[in-house]
Image (tube, chains in turn green, red):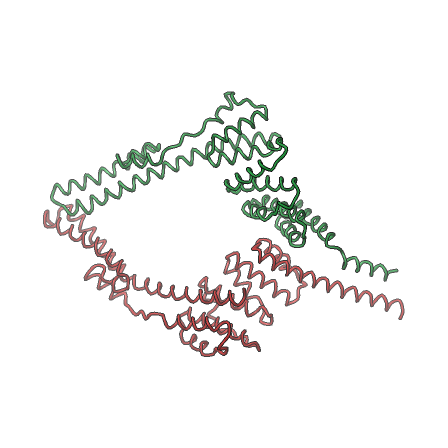
Length: 283
Length: 289
């Protein structure tokens, strides 16, 4: 009896089918994921991708592997994992989930153009228009980051209507007040005309005045030297110093205008992001 | 045969089969590991190998494989120091040793860690002539990298395979050695020359453009100081300011010229070392791709 049991156990262990192996690998991977061992879970899902020849199983494994990376905040790795999916040979539901996840991960990794193109793909592939509301929030966030504020505002209105929120109310009006951006070329030109004025235009009064004083001092030194007959000092030291402050100052004006713009854009996007995330977390 | 004997035989069989399955699991894991490396899935590769690194029941051959794959993974992760460390753990008896030795030498040279390579060169004389040739090539490259031409010549004369896949790179290495320029310039002379004519020391050191760009400002500042002296005398603030600036630039030019000799020497050495590493890299890629 013992002999038969042993033989049965050994045979069972040796001749388990590939399908059983995949199922058991999925179970192992899922349990590792649930216990928070994301690196090991990612490896276990990769083993399924390696062993399986079914596109459905591989897509599922890739999707779950990307979840592991998402949990570890390795968004670039998660995105690369999802980009390996051959979603053409999978069914509609998994393709929808994969694309939605890919758009989210692309957004989280800061790859906004990829997120936008994936969302466009989703828009064209869904047959049930109500599904659009499932990722509308993401579309708004992506368009905002791409500074397509007009389109983002339209979608935000749609989103707010769907959530029964008043778009005209005083407390929500700030969401539609797009940031006023500085023209960096204007800042540069202003500093060329009057040194320091570009910095003042960009909101940096003290830096602007400092630039004016430095440029003024250099040109005064240069003129004073020439007037007193120190031609070489006036030309080579004074004028060279002035040219350095003058060209450097105008380039700096352009730089701080761009920096100020980035700050205003980030502040506006944060406002929208906070609003959307608050709404989504209330679900 | 009694019942006890049958049970014993079965248990023995069971143990053998389980051991076989353990080995087959390791082999399949190594196939999986190769797949991970081929697909550049380096985090997964690391996770898989870490699962084995703490295992006690591994045979020496298995340990060698693990260390070799760790070396490869860290090499692809662009951590040459860690990679070289793992490659150095592969034992001499392993068939992965020649590649590991070559990779370790290349990696230590690439991070300029020549301390580990300064110990007497290892010899793993085997029956395989290509393996011996690889060792000679690595040691010759390391000697030339350390500017030790005597040792380089020794290894260079030992090559025994005239038509191997390494021959081209052995010849290239000799070409590199022959093309190293003789640079015997003195920092003292460079400094003295720049004291005579600003920038001349830099031209002497082999940096003519820097010599010219040093000469112009020092010359102009000298002219300014002369003009100030002529117009308002020694005690005028114009003269003090201009001559002060001139002195700073003049002394800086002398010190810079003296330093430029050693900078130029390092640049030449760096260029030669880059060529050695590139030659070695291409040779290893061709051998072990």
